[in-house]
Image (cartoon, rainbow, N blue to C red; front, side, top):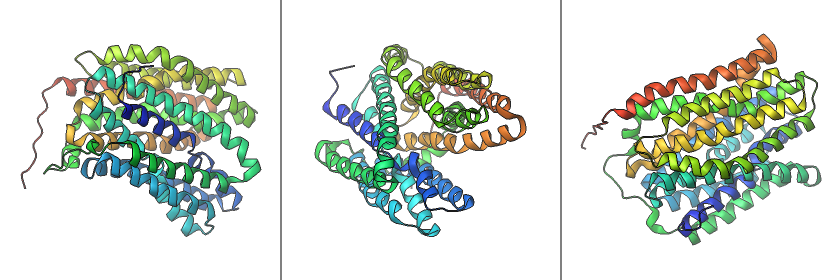
Length: 397
């Protein structure tokens, strides 16, 4: 791992790890709702609202990071999380749960666009940015593995609400550290024309958004379709846990190998559209191969095969965002792109449910494979757009 990064990059990597390692709210929200004995329709609404909040929060935090500054936005979002997560742990009525879920979803993944923009602010070259983003993804996955291990161990002893309180406490500590460590100079200059006006009229961003959504749906399927497929084969939750362990181990092993290769690719003059297309093929084929599995080993192998695609996808998409975003709208672009993960997590279970109902595991695997391959196909028009000179017309107010 690099050792010559500025201290702020190390602080951002630590923040990324801590947010995800203590991020118990989303993975354990279903258990919290189940413990309240809510109807399935009410629980589904609360989960959907959390997802919608996650999606909107990415755009809002990206916009705020460009308008009021990176440091203020990140600290503010963490303070809101520190207040809202405990509320979500204590309320019981459907209305209160829905409101708390909306706000919690909005700030749960708030650091993603802010950190992405700050990496681009601090590191001037594309190779360095790609390397930092690769290790940022590594920190996210290690944190997620920590969340599952620690949360699973504590849930039975302390109860799910306690995990939410711990998540809030972690966010409070992060807010303090952000205000203490991150420099005020990370704020971008206030510009006359808002970043959203440029972003919503930039066809490159929206074609990238579509390609990324299709590419990341197999990642969402890892957490939605895979357990359903395994259950249909008579495998229990412990078996599914092994697929997650396998995925985490693959990230730990492959990230140090792939990150230098991706950094060298990012040093080239052209954006990483080819690697993004490759990631869609790898993710689609990897998770799609689960349709041929019937044992824990087979499903774990499918999860392992998908990991290289996941690593490449996040680094390649980040490289493209960095290249097309104006300096004063970096967080706005990153926030809009960041909605792809939330949207993929929302789409994947819906596709999995439909596929399993109408065609079983084979159709679920084929649907996942198709999404990954369509993501690769959309990279063709994206490649053409990125090769053309881009002009941005903005009205002067």
